[in-house]
Length: 112
Length: 110
Image (cartoon, rainbow over all chains, first blue to last red; front, side):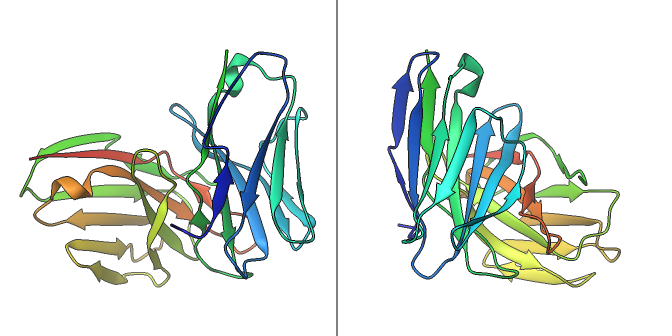
């Protein structure tokens, strides 16, 4: 157990639908990062939150949004889903500063 | 965005063999990290290298940061089936989240 909890582990949904992925960071970590992993693109950074505020944005589509709550857990919302959104979505957390990331086990999203 | 090239993309070897995988870029990095990802799991940090020419050892794994801090290598001695996984390098500039290479997928056959 890495200390980063992601739910659900698997999600199958239809095109056009909306889903919410949840992440609880490791205790004490203020930063939460969301990454998307596909076979051809590798791990792509989506968005970062630090202590409740958006800190950095990567290749995140406008159909996707995220937030970090006062208890530091984070949610990634994916809407108007397309087949190409099928991928592994990882959440990672870290303390402030130059530290490695601790990743959760990911959510495998399949859009059919 | 600076690009990290990892090679080889795939590697399949027999148990007991040695191997080296590479992480290269044309840019200079302040630090570089290596992660291993096993099927169904998230990446796990193995090591961070910071100083040019630095060598770090983790049991049978040896990590080296190039003198010019543009490249890094990971050498595994006497590979075991438990070493199977996706090896990722990543850089951190201090201002942006980690950027990952596409990884080397290693399979060690017993």
